[in-house]
Image (tube, rainbow, N blue to C red):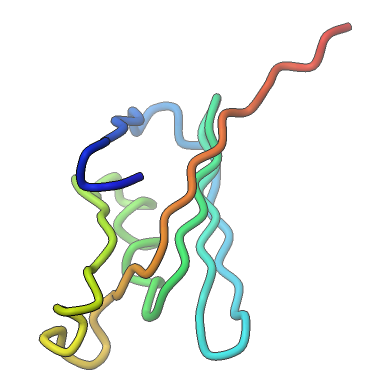
Length: 90
């Protein structure tokens, strides 16, 4: 995802979330019916909670030049990767 491209995934297609620590960073995996979204950054638990409550309206990467403006403890998204889940053929 980039500033030139957006993707809207409906909350009712949300299946589950998984949060893992990888070194100093966290990786949040959001699985939807047809897509998997991997979010890399810091303090991502708040994003996970917003998804659980179906309150997340926008998720975007923070430009490097603006990271110093974000208060400690606030989520910082470094990278977002979206993969389409292919249906397995029987």
